[in-house]
Length: 94
Image 1: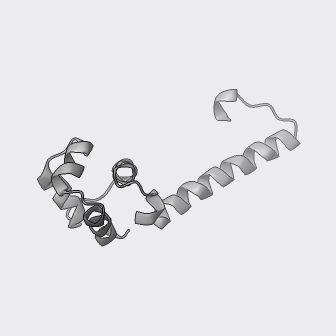
Image 2: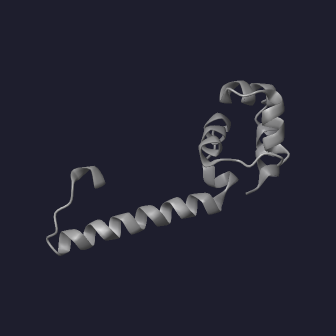
Image 3: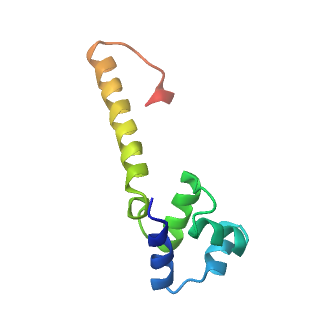
């Protein structure tokens, strides 16, 4: 994860730490800890920061997005396999 990239994009966008922190519903200190790497960045927060900065999460953390993409691919492969075998599954798994 490229924590420095978050800070750089935020500054280039003209946003202060206070602004981003407010949008996230956290203190400026808590956000500062994210940017400095003192606090581990959870995926949910990563996505929220990306939305605020108007970038894709992959711009901050390509690995996280690759993992999600791989999971989605495996899910789709499993559904295709079940369909090919004529095995029914609940709609909630689609």
